[in-house]
Image 1 (spheres, rainbow, N blue to C red):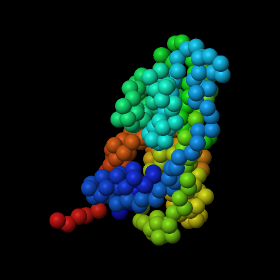
Image 2 (tube, rainbow, N blue to C red; image 1 turned 45 degrees about the horizontal axis):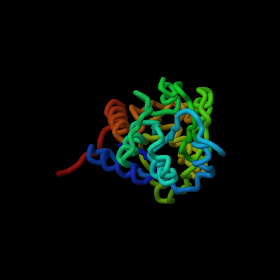
Image 3 (cartoon, rainbow, N blue to C red; image 1 turned 60 degrees about the vertical axis):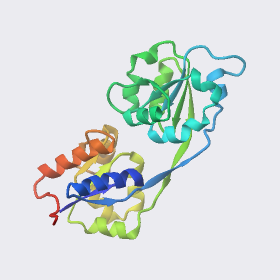
Image 4 (cartoon, helix red, strand yellow; image 1 turned 90 degrees about the vertical axis):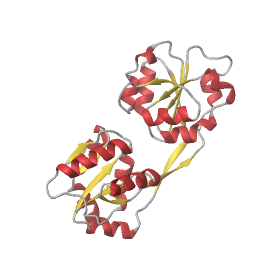
Length: 261
């Protein structure tokens, strides 16, 4: 029987594991990081208005993930809320903004990457000041792309990842399973797995099939030594569930566990 290794943050990992369990598949839930808020490290009033008078052009608040929405909205000065256009990277981010009562004016028609958002033609019209809400070290390509389109770009680092070393019993379970399919939604999780897992566990991951939500993560896995990596249908649990089910149902010697009623 194949076990699915899920390394997403705990809440989304548990949701996916529950869905897999309902289909008869077993999971190993091993979140390798969590999130915490941080101060943006910049003055948003200054970023959108300038030191003396209001900057010309549009004012854009760019949210790169649901976590950016969760931790970033509270930092926007209230006097700017009705002056901003909201941009979202990915459907899940857009949904979280709308759930908080903010209309999303700029979103890619498909895809969930910085490159997809940069393809939106409206971004080239009347560029002004943009603030990108993200974690430290993230979305450099997005910042450069907006600058190339004529935007003045500031980065608000409103949350950070905190590593979660896996428990010894989870490592033992990973090493002991007969077959493994691992699921990867961030390069950070990959780097933490390589750092925290013993060689035997990391080697098992590299020599087992894997699913990645982006070509960037796929290439990162391949550079680490993985040889059987496929792209998932999407970054959310719905796309991952569909991809996992397809992979497990078509692979030889892989089948759901037997259940009794």
